[in-house]
Length: 372
Ligand SMILES: *Cc1c(COP(=O)(O)O)cnc(C)c1O
Image (cartoon, rainbow, N blue to C red; front, side, top):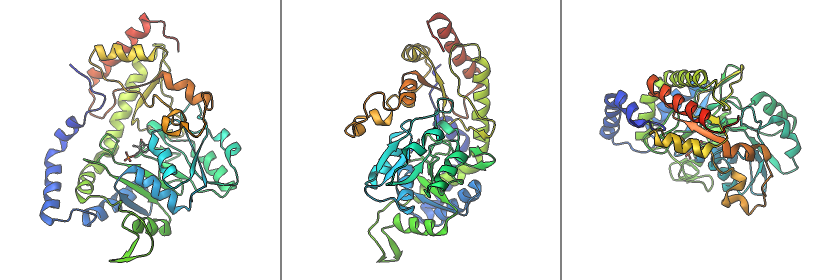
């Protein structure tokens, strides 16, 4: 029996009737872009996050891009972020014409290291974008303190961390703006591309609402050049069916993670660490192992699909190499990249599957020269 790396079909089986009813509702009203379902979803997601405003857009990347524009980032500016993330975080910065300035990560969390941020702040620095990678909250309090000292807005990339809490509050709701992706494989996923921003700042929400819709103030009255970054009504309808299940699904992910923790405690691997002041929602369960590629092959032979997030740090991507980040620019990020391995993780994963995976990993660790 194959164990996939995530399984959206299993989830659909549990939601089928509600999803089909929601899609039918959209088809019958024949409202396919924005509309009532999008407004309702925005209200529900804002309430879930504990913020005043949510603006739904077409992708998580658009949410990041429009967030940076809304806090005033301009061409030629610099934006601080982590090199250990999905490429979209950096690309959103580049879309504005600004320059991503990478700051190395804290090896304990794999997230932006607050201790290193201040040294990277220069005259053109205009924002900080921490990423809650793998669903684990970044260390927001120290980051916000630095941002406040330098009058910089904080845009949280919460694209992997729907529902995670940092010191009691939902991530995305803590900085100036939080950006979410609802790509199908995320903890809260649509049935296509989708995204949203959340904020307590009314002027930011108003501006983003215009920016996602051709800079339109009123019908055929355009205040500035903008884009079409609207959310489809169908996606909002699907998200409305799924949102009430998010906490239950995240709890299931946490249960699988504790089971992995327990079963793998003796294996020679670095397991993901959680912090007492935050709760990880395990978008990914990422271990670090020497001999990672051999372990990946071994798991594949057993029909277990694992992943790597991410094999090439952003500053070593061809797309960003022209900017002159040589090997060794961000040593912590570079040292973990060849050791990262994401074990299967999704709410519907079964206990016996977790046991099977842990057994395969443990056997490999015992018979190879793995050193943690
Ligand atoms: C998924 C993701 C994005 C981009 O979201 P899309 O909806 O795919 O555009 C941005 N940042 C991170 C960390 C992500 O995981």
